[in-house]
Amino acid sequence: MKVLLISANRTEINMRTMPLGLAFVAEAARRRGHEVEMLDLARAVDTRAAIAQAITRHPPRIIGISLRNIDDQTMRNTRFLYEDDREVISLVRTLTDRPIVLGGAGYSMFPDAILRHSSADLGIEGEGEVAFVTLIEALERGEPLAGIPGVHVKDGGPAERRGLIRNMGDSPLPDPAVVLDASGVTEDIWVPVQTRRGCPLNCSYCSTASIEGRILRKRNVESVVEWIAKLKGLGVRTFYFVDNTFNLPRSYAMELCEAMSRASLDVVWRCILYPWRLDEELASAMARAGCIEVSLGSESADNEVLRRMNKRFRREDVTEANRLLAEQGIKQMGFLMLGAPGETHGSVEKTLAFADSLCLDSLKVSIGIRIYPGTALATQARNEGIITPGDTLLEPRFYITPALDEEWIRQTVARYAATHPNWITA
Ligand code: B12
Ligand code: SF4
Image 1 (cartoon, rainbow, N blue to C red):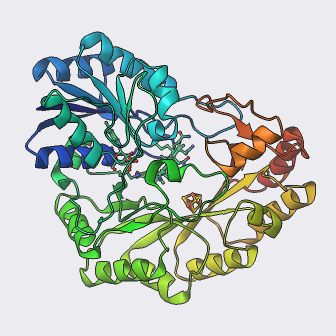
Image 2 (cartoon, helix red, strand yellow):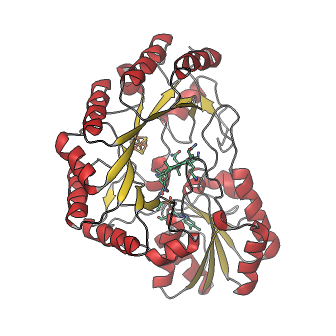
């Protein structure tokens, strides 16, 4: 079957990304013999012309659209990025009457709300590889599409519970040449690498479970290293591990770093680190394997606030991780989240003073927390009257504890930020 897969994301906030998730779906469909074309709108100069060309050149039987960001997670002057994506969906609708199926991180957090209010026909919640292939093959055979696990059908009632790829070990990685070709870049881009899916940690505000599930699944380290080596052969030297917690589980992180070092890849990379259970041996293995920067989401320095966020780490763990990474010469971008349940004037001051004491290369301070469906934070916000019971949360809503005034937090942050040019307030 002829399939067109479109990545709708065009924002370059923070950095330009590549449609890795879509490439996984494309790979799965190609392996079943389907003819797949990928269109990354981030590289299109004229969105309409690019879509029209793709649709007329090889008229597809079905179009998949990947939605990544709904918004920029910034409480003040929020950018509601989904509005641009909805226009892309409408544009595709005007150009073809073939079924449109949505997927991606952005879609998976709000599957019903997005499907209801867009001109798409179907949506796939979570991992796309199995569900998308099952769906297009059911379409080919003229079978009903409702009832396929994870597939949402417009006005079709609740979807069957989605499945997860249990045996991630050897499940195929997308062809590196295809990934690069779709985005048209090899330089100045941090090519995403995914080694694990799922996060069991269940932080109170986090939406990851709706995207990747809570069960951690790992790829074989050798296949990841081989994939990076192939990309290196195609001219890529900079990588970004998109795993939620690079250092967890520790044994896997160690194995991966050691395999990368053994392969003498001579590449550099960044990752997201959970400031817990980091020790000297792992920090040093990361540096040897090419890690040059981590995102360190410490969020707060108040142990009670951290406990209420359901974080496993405590302030002391952050101090230790910061020291170990600095010793290895790994740059650190810190992240704070102010206004969480349990936050007080004292905890805000304490957190900012703590961040000031750390060895950080930059720091992003978010004021207010984006509320996602199905989270403990959403329940709390509903109980406190911050959101209404029927709110789908697709239009961004933010939590700040009623005990604090947003303006006071902003002024307090501004006081610290005035002497820290490397702090960004959002
Ligand atoms: C790593 C990461 C980053 C890195 C990216 C580095 C890089 N070089 O790629 C950095 C730190 C730079 C980053 C920045 C931002 N990020 Co970010 N990021 C992530 C993270 C952790 C992983 C994304 C990823 O690559 N996943 C791996 C791929 C393989 O998975 P996937 O795309 O989801 O694809 C699978 C499925 O979704 C599905 N699928 C995908 N497409 C399609 C299409 C079809 C048709 C189908 C059927 C299925 C399907 O199948 C795929 C394979 O199973 C996610 C959280 C998460 N766990 O998803 C947040 C996340 C995507 N980011 C988010 C946000 C908001 C941002 C920023 C806007 C933050 C900011 N203000 O700076 C920027 C925007 C960047 C940009 N230009 O787009 C939010 C989006 C939600 C929202 N509110 O909009 C997320 C979900 C985090 C969260 N929980 O809130 N991010
Ligand atoms: S560790 Fe990260 S991905 Fe996992 S639940 Fe917490 S915030 Fe979400």
